Length: 512
Image (cartoon, rainbow, N blue to C red; front, side, top):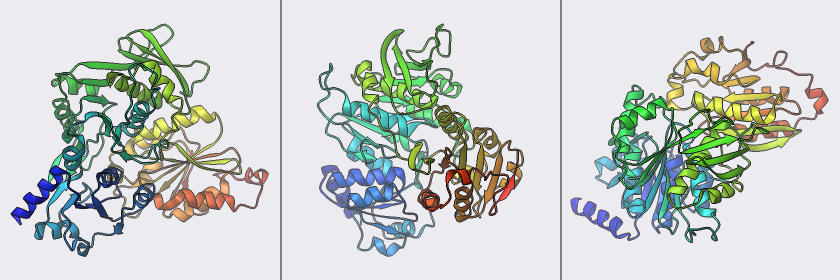
C-alpha cells in the first residue's frame, strides 16, 4: 500500500489523469474543487448527504456523477485519491472505510494548493462577511477589463468562489492567466487537519473584509479566530499587499500581532472629508441623490479615481466593491477601468438573488446566516424598496446558529423586516420560542416548510418583498412559494385584506 500511495502522489504531481472521489462534494467549496479537477482532465466522482441547487446543477452540467449518502461500497474499486470535505468526521462510514483500507486521501485545500495554486498569483478574500461577493467582483474585474486599457490583461483569471457569479455561471474555473482568485475561509480544513483552510493558499494579494465571532462549533472565542488570521498574515510575502477596512478593531489587533507586508486601508468619506476613514488609502462615497449604494465614487490616495453605477445595493456591497477595486489595482488594473467594469456586474446567485416576481410580489434568495449579514441584507433591501413591506423568512441552519451562539443578536438583526417567519427544525439546540418574545416585529414560528409557504402565500399582497435567508437548500422553499403565489386565484385588492395579525393558521405567532 505504501508504494501505491507514493505512485498516486507522483501521478498527481505530474498531472497524469487519475480518478478522484470527493466526499461532501456538494458543499460550495468542494463543488468548486470538483470543477477544477475535472478541468484538469481527471475523472471525478463524489458523494454527499444533501444534494441541492445550485451546486448540484453545476456538477451535473460538468458531467460529474454524485451519489447521495456515504455508503462505503462506492469506494470500491478504490479511487486513486479521495478528497475529504471538512463536513465529515471520524465515525462517518465512508471515512472509516478509506482509513481501514488505506486508500490515499487528502483535503480540498491541500489538493487545491498543490495542483492549482502553486505557480499562480493568488488573490485571496478572507473575513467573516462578503467573501463570496468580493471574490466574484474581483474575478469579474480581471475578466472584463477593457483590453485597450494600460496594462491590458489578455488572459482569463482562474477562480474558486463559494457561490456562482451570474456572469460566469460556475463557481470555479482554471483560467489561463497568472491570477487566481480564491474565497479564503477560516473554517477548518478536514478531520485530520484542524488548521483554517486559508493557511494552504499562500496568497500574494490578501483582502481582509472584516472580522467578528463566528463558527462557534469550532472556535471558542474571537481570539481563537484572530490567531488563525495571524497565521494567514504570516504567509503573505513582502512584495504582496494586504487590504482591510480601517476602524475594524479585530483586524487591527490581528495585524498588531505582526505584519511584514505593505497594507492599504479602505474606508468611506463625507462631503467634508471628515467622515469615516479620512486616512484610508482607498475611499468610497455614496451618491447623495441615491442612498441605496447603487452609485458611488472612488478615491485613491485622495484623488478621484472613478465612478461606479451598478445594479447592486447596500453599503456592504459598496465596501465589497472598494476592496475588489483595490485588489485589482495591485494586479495592475487601473481603478477607473475597474469602476467601469463593475457597471456590468450582474451579481451572485443566492446573494439577494431575485428568484421570481408574481402578482407584483417579489421573492428573493439570500445566503445570510449570521446576524450581521442578515441586518446588512435587510438594510440594503430596505434602501431599495422604501416603505414597501418586507417579509423575512429565516432558517437557522448553520452550525453556529443551530447551537444558539447568535440568538441574542437576532432580534436586532431582523428588525428591518415588517413580518417574520422562522423555521423551527426539530434538532435546534436552543429555545427559539423564548428568544422571539423579545422581538419588536410581528412574527411566526413554523415547524414545517409547507406551513410557511401556505401562510405567506395567504398574506402576501402586491408590492411585497419576500426575503428567504438560509445557507442551505431550505427544502426548495423558493420554488414552492413561487408556485403557491402563482396559483392564487384572488386579485391584489383581495390580498390586501390580509395582514399577519389576522392570518397565520399554521404558526405559533407573537406580535410587536
